[in-house]
Structures are given as structure tokens and as C-alpha cells.
Length: 173
Image 1 (cartoon, rainbow, N blue to C red):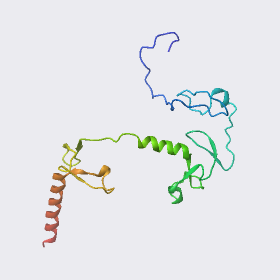
Image 2: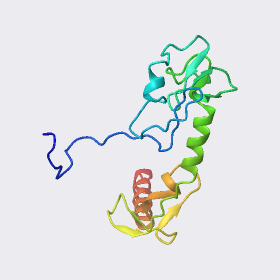
Image 3: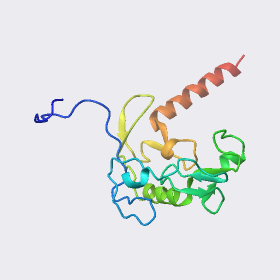
Image 4: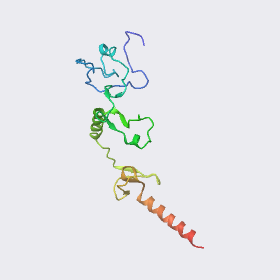
């Protein structure tokens, strides 16, 4: 791009990552408001003063970049780590994201409106039908995503009839 020319369209490419608006520099006593494009928790003045080395027994939260003591006081316990399934989690069995950030993230995701669908696509016949108990089976178990079966009632009943007929044929000598 040539300097001084008028930008008529945005260049193609990946979207630019942005951060939450209204963030304040994490430097002691600094009230500088950070740009949404600044990935660091510090303004330009305090970024050079900031040490990148984390002391032993501490962890830097990847969301707020604060260095905190790695204890259950500041970090939630990680159940997956206690079961030995998550190899990326440190031996302390604690999450890497601090409690303040995790609680804020959970609050934000809980306030998002749920997607309400009126129609559902049948994986068997390929037709789209109104999402009601008239056309679909609903189960509160974790068997089906969202509780609704993937096949409509008609397809499910046909499948069960075919299976019963096949079983009858197999049983008769």
C-alpha cells in the first residue's frame, strides 16, 4: 500500500485479533487505557519494565497476565488433572487461568442467549421438520445433543419395524 492513498477496500487476510475494550495498564499506579489491539497487559512505558521471568511457585495467568502464587487461593482445581487425563496441566492439579478470569468468563458465557431453533433436519430422511414432540423424540439424558434425537419419529419407527422383522426372520429356523 502506498502512503497517502485513499483506502477503498480492506485488504484480504485473517481478521485482526482484538481484546476487551476498557482495559487498564497493569503497572502499579498506572491508569493508562490500553488499545483493543494491544495484546499485552501493560502500556508501552511499563512493558519494558515488566519482567518476563515468573518466580518459582507462581504462574502467569494467560488472560490477565498477572503473576500470582500458584495455590488454590488464586487458581481453581482441575478435576481432569487429578484423574491423570490432562498431561498439559502442571503437577499441582490447578488450572492455568486464575479464578478471577475463569469466573468472569463463566459469567459472560452464562449471559449469552440460547439458540432457539424452530426446525430440525432429520439425518435419515433428510427432511426438515418443526422441532416439536409431535415429530421428534426428546430425552433429558446425554444420549442426544440438545436432548432431541437425530432421526424423526417416522424414521425411528420404520427403523424399529425393520429391525424387529429382521430379528423375527433370524429366529425362525
